[in-house]
Image 1: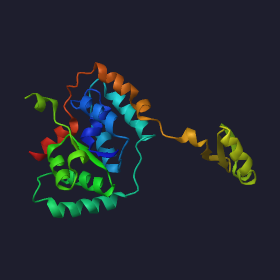
Image 2: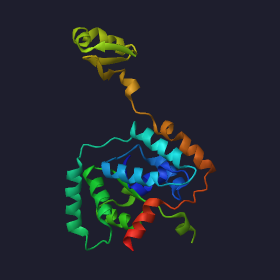
Image 3: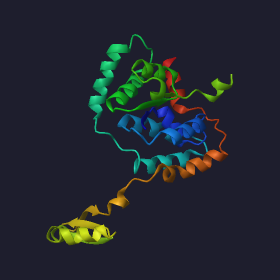
Image 4: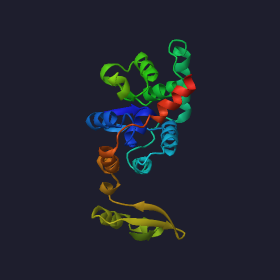
Length: 150
Length: 80
């Protein structure tokens, strides 16, 4: 299924040593055909992969660049439309859900891009996505492995 | 990859496409500068995820998965 994965998920997908890497990889391999991609996701994923200092950083970066040449393509909805939709969603729900502006962006972009599923490792963002109609099989929230153990 | 100029492509479109259908690829030049590529559609299909991710998945077998997710770490700092 075509999925809007938050940058927290995409970084874990590319970075082998990420705390969520194994759970994200297993779920994506079983469920996702392609990810929705836009300039904000590209910025966040690139920025966070550039900052990695582990021995797996280079592998992650190379895989991202290979994916950008093949699997990750910008959709037809332009960035200004996504930002307008974000503002509309913020006007509707900012007082009810304490998520940040970029969390609103990702959920609004998922709706605008007609994603079937929204995936995130971020609880606040998952709450927002849920409030926007991404429920049960349409929402994948990855809980931190340390949280699961405790 | 064979080189064609724009006039050749215009005059011999059908023959060129026959060659492409057989698997040949061309670079198309205008005024001496390559501006386009013609290649079989199958070659243009995107790589599969397992091709793109093979090294990451191999690395994951050795990795301990102990690195804090940097996106969440940054968001937590901002939300404090």
